[in-house]
Image (tube, rainbow, N blue to C red; front, side, top):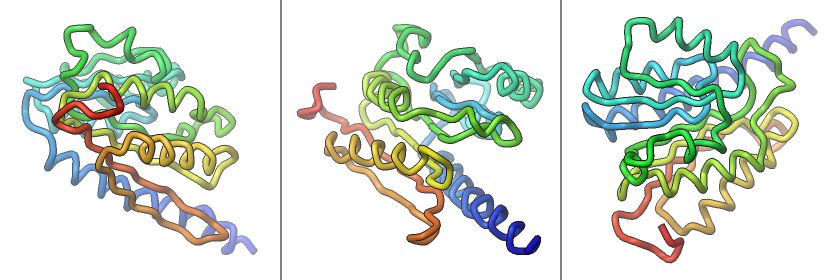
Length: 205
């Protein structure tokens, strides 16, 4: 019985780690030193740290999280990196916090949805604010820039959030790819990577 419980807990974590590595590998190929990027869901800071290294000291990372404990953990992790600005705010408020001169110049915006690892699992990202944040991302991105979304479908609300993300990307008609894991009865994480067209589209950005 205990072994079964441990397996059920470890498998989603292993799948998430696999997709996180895949995401980080793609970011490293897409980004250059000096780029400006956004971590829309700072969490434990691992994505923020990876992005700070990828854009180097000549680039900049803007990070958002509603939970003070997440920002504290991230500040500790980033103690040797000065190229990060952290905001105690929702990702839905990115447009009002990111300096206006950077609107339309962001190369990548990363979302890692769900709850804070080792935190309160009752505090999760919500469909409404996530969709607002993705719509804001369309305005913040540079032409040819990227949105990366890692979603988790195993917790309450996670499946509907991932579905809403995919439906939004379908409606935009931008080039995107999806990597999914898990089974029908136990859906695992899903990773979306979408690129803003280099020219204006019918979406209006």
